[in-house]
Image (cartoon, rainbow, N blue to C red; front, side):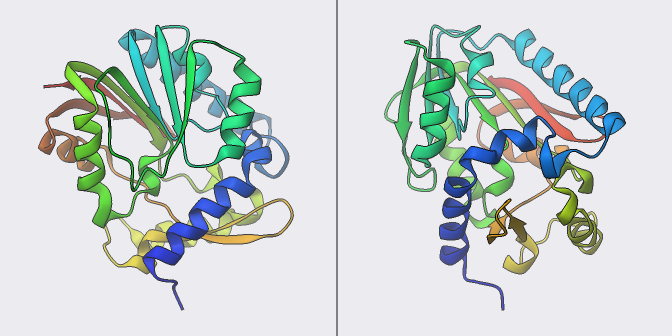
Length: 246
């Protein structure tokens, strides 16, 4: 039986707290996420492409990073921004981020993004691998907050997962392949079809929200909230978007 949405969101919070020390293994294709040299090389090429698109946009001034995690993208943002506010729910990942960067130009803020309300406007906003974890029923209210957090002509960048089963751990690849086949091309709205099972290195399992959005769907949702964002995808693993607050 699929848990209720509040239960899933609590599991999702617990998952990212428990996953803090192994999150970087996913991004750097280590351990259970190492699917061979060719896979890692393609992943790294696509990461480099997305990183260059971010540099081209130049998120400068005061920048807000939502779901900042362990600092993988925070370290890129401080190359451009005067000051970064790194927001995340999990204190464990914020502590890793703080220790990794050790930068006076990063302010840390712990907050639940489903309860968060912006208290100031920023010159730029970045989201990495977060929007796919927002339930569809909360997507518009969340994007309204994103729009509220940006100054007019404020810059926006996001990156997230494309529908590639090999982006997850080797022991979950088959499950994700089946999930993607069942979802097809349609944006499903039932809670069971928004939910995937994730497993940690120690065997703990959690249900979380996970969408593999089509770029055109997100581009339309952003436009509805005044964000002029052009969405694109890499060859296998990522979707990304860059644009401005109108």
